[in-house]
Image (cartoon, rainbow over all chains, first blue to last red; front, side):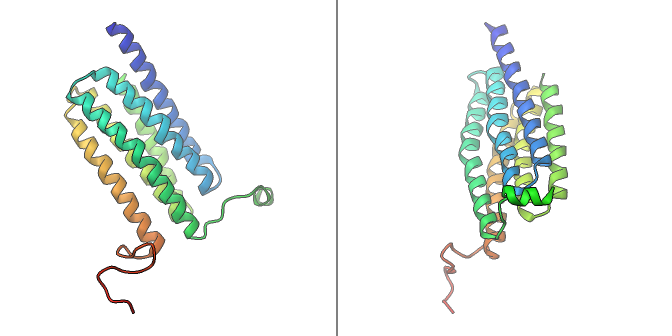
Length: 107
Length: 97
């Protein structure tokens, strides 16, 4: 049973690392602020949740596990809040979303 | 395994730093720094498990709180140009001019 938990947690941690790297590459490569938010969303949702779940499977129901659950719950509440505030501030600051017409003009 | 996760998180943080340094607008930089703080929480947790000292999770929890508050504060400053202003445009505690 312990081996099963180990394998599942390793798979979760590795997949979370892969999602985090994907999100960072997207954040670096995408052309516009509002498209870059997709990469940050991947990091905030899949990367964090999968890695924290993997850590939780490693720790089990101990004090560390409770702290991991607290971090997880806090992250899934504050991540979308910060992203929403960021998009609102960007729109308030007159940042125009990239439209297909502009993209065609640029390339 | 935690070492591999730590290396992946470090590479991610390096890429995010590149975006934070390049970012054409200030919002790109805030987005990158917010994700950087999220990854900092994760690497503190991963390092705690790597060195078998899970007490580091306390620091990760506090860092998550500080990261959120800091991001929202910086966003408010860049949105309204003032930290003490409300969304309606009035400043509490000061007479209206």
